[in-house]
Image (cartoon, rainbow, N blue to C red; front, side, top):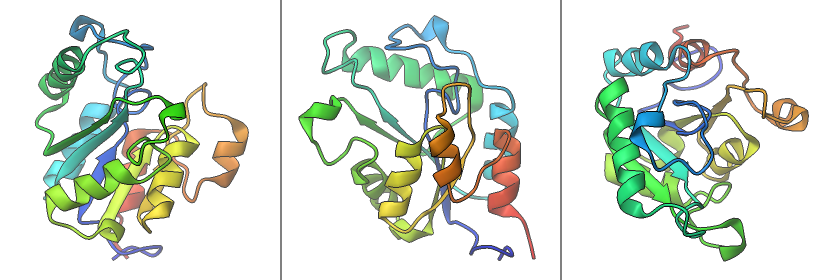
Length: 177
């Protein structure tokens, strides 16, 4: 148990801008590039014996820019580069579709928790924008923001925990008392 929280039983990551460089509406696996320290952070979670999930908004599907098969191939490339992912949750909707799964709503996190066999509040979420933090807060999960140049200052100010990179984020989640 850390000084701040109970150790999570699973760690979820946002995909674009968190695990991999954000290429808007990417349907091409050849364009997937890991974020700095992503490989090490994922390894740290695996070495701690925790399952790993990815929860990703992919509105390009609803917009007709990519299809689910392309999203799946991009996800497969992420796993090739970073190692196995225990659960993938993809929201193919646009914000205006008002679905239950699109972050900041917690649907994908709830589905990931169920698939991993953990309670929602036992998850930790690592992401790069406020929607990731809000989805985690909605289910009582721990959240760590790893800002990028696209992260708005108000999202940083509102985040429960902020880390300069993915390794520091995982250190926060796994630190011992």
